[in-house]
Image 1 (cartoon, rainbow, N blue to C red):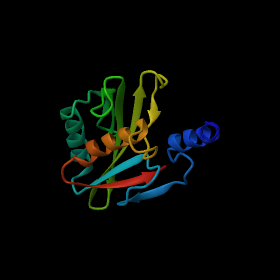
Image 2 (image 1 turned 120 degrees about the vertical axis):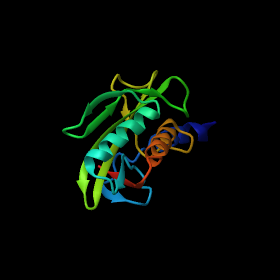
Image 3 (image 1 turned 120 degrees about the horizontal axis):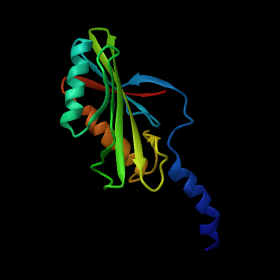
Length: 158
């Protein structure tokens, strides 16, 4: 029992680690610890990539809260997660920019978990223990973004 009491704070800190203290890293194909940005590179022109990604998110159950075609910004409303039950919801913020040979769609996610989150939710990162709320939220975000057709998925930390 005494060992457990001594180890409990350490286990708690390790379980909550999300990679928030890691330095920024540019977009790369390897899944980065602490990645908080998912980038999709596509050969489609930026405006068309923006329109396709907005339709893609809507077809996956996201309501578009803000969609600015001029600035090529998309913000969805929170949607129930597939992996964590009805008390957890995620939203996606995306921007589309010109890139060599096409466009880059930069995405970030927010997680709202009813008993623990502020009204604004918390940033989704590749971190936490296997099966943790943070890890499952990242995996769901990754699954959604990687399913966008015609793009290459990259990971970044900002």
